[in-house]
Image (spheres, rainbow, N blue to C red):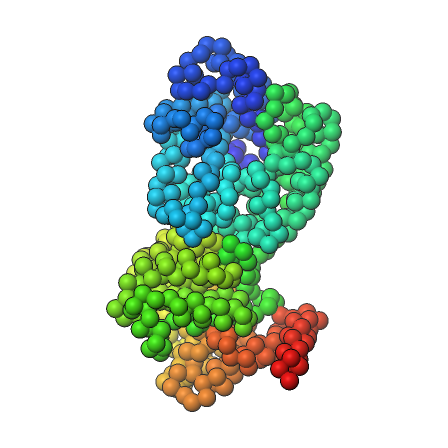
Length: 565
């Protein structure tokens, strides 16, 4: 059984990295030529053999990082490559059917939007480094040392581009990165980019605490490398962690290689105690995660960063200015938007460049997830590169060319996508919309995009020009939820084009749509009425248990009223 299939079926035992062991014997090589030392070869083979005999499920090659303060900093890239080829060869000669693990440590570089290093240049660096590892026998990568979500995200994209089927472990060697405020964002990102397992290095007490906090947020197998005094107590701790849901156990680097036997003897043969949970669609910024689905709070996506019908904003975008974009972002989040739709597609603008600029500025100013909105795949790509999280793409439709162009990009960057039920012609009936939704889901499956990353838009049209569309859209929402089980979103204000008192029209539609299963909408959060209506409608659609949100909203409204008098 290969390593990826082993995860979730049996308890995985990680080997002990041998750097400290060899260092204690003055045999740790400092250059590629050092691998020719006969005593090193003999000692290393014996150490690897002892770990395999003890039951380890992988062997960790003694590779060098791109930038390691006391060693590789003095190595040229070509010498690092030669060194790593030798290290991988040494592990491969002993591994047999076991996986060869190569650790990839982040360089600690600050990538846009958190720094000045471009996405493309950082990606190329990691791709070149990982390609050498994979080409020379690494069939498992452990990613460690990242300092923020964007660096982790880029490393995972690089690994997927080298070999998408290669299992990847993400290890927090600084557990402080798993702060509660950003925890779900990291986990959501890892799942969206096909991480095989997550884990950390920590002592027993902290590991147990973190394990209990993280299990409800992810289905990813969790592997813990224990840092502790070795002996019978380690075995007891390993059993306890497995009982609480750990899928694998390892030990931190030590000179005591026999410690693997202690753990293996106690836990080998046990089955992981994993409870698979059904998660709704999740999108995430570096700071916040938003869940979209039935029986969850209705999600409000701010619509105002869009030049359609806004001449002043369009003029600013032509001039390359983003002042109004930034002001609109702040106003919408303050008013209660859960996410922001970002569309900078005015005529005569360099849209891809503007989208990239908007991604950088907005992520520095607001903490909510962003929805990238453009008809251009190039523009969506430019935005996705710079969004440090799991974005939502608005949108792919059921046209063959659009599916072919955009879905590979959605998959590459680990995004979620809105599927707009429009084909070569506008749909008329609910049944047509359902068929188009099914086509989009099938196409996503072809690109290995999980249904949990798909949000369907049933194409709500302007009622003034498509007077029969209202019942068809409402029925389509019900059918799509019933047949496909997917979350539903609409562009609410689309329905009121061409009519007076537009807010009355599209807000009435919104409440009706919520009654048949609508989960989210792109709307104007500056409209105070829409918040009241959604809060009240949520009471009757199982979205507000015990009326908590409604009562909280009402109290805040009363407090504001008292302050204004």
